[in-house]
Image (spheres, rainbow, N blue to C red):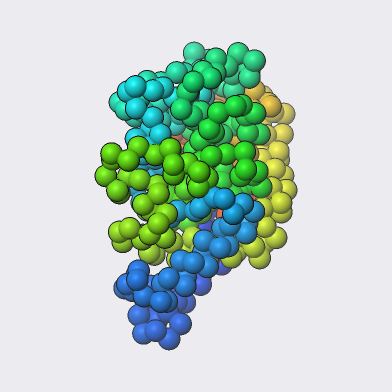
Length: 358
Ligand SMILES: Cc1ncc(COP(=O)(O)O)c(C=O)c1O
């Protein structure tokens, strides 16, 4: 039996995709072998890789002056790769601090560059996005980095900031959930294990003009331009994750693309937020305008009931509902692969739990 998996990542993958993968696992298209066993230099894999990249470009309407890279190392690797390429101890970079992931990005970048934290909501436990008027932007900064969706705190910036700087965004937990205007960004990165596919793959969308700004004294494996010149095959890429990501992109196209996903995702999030906001038993701490549509943290009015809630949820097939270990409470991650029925099942359970334990 398939459960409702509310995990923040690695997260649920569309069942249709998993069934296709299962059917093709032993023998891909009469090749007599699995994708996992194939050379990344083979014409078969190159075709899979190319078609995945093109579908991703189509879904996000990525302009021609950008390249898309399929890398390893996770989003955490990007926390270092970005400052390695585009800043140094002689320069500085702007970072917005809105939650645990931007804090980690700042901590890594601080080893390589001077960092100006333009604004922070840390003292309020990241329950909102600092007002734009209070941002202390440095006009000389090499770039501006932010995390549009903070996966742990469930706080989000819904449109790209209009600032006169190179804009770099960690979109790990929000990519492909709705359309984005890629032209407003200079670099976007995202770990795959939420809306793209299995862990092991990191997708980077980079404006080609950024290659000219790279530090050239770093090893090739850390240079975006070298990955681009080699079609993301500078070394062996995560072939199986790339292949599954390609299937997820085809599924998204069949589902009607990102406008359709946006409607579905907003409906799912609104349904859950409405229920929480109308309840005295559950609550969400995030300012309404800054709420995530992907990760919805909530607390029970009585913390002592947390583990009972998690155990009972599990018995009903609702898994991974506990909040991040650093925060406690609950969190429902409702990425693209979670249908609205999953949100209804969660709400039905929350109602029953309150009736029994209220
Ligand atoms: C927004 C964000 N950034 C970075 C990461 C770290 O990703 P990885 O484990 O792929 O390095 C995560 C993981 O959940 C995330 O949600």
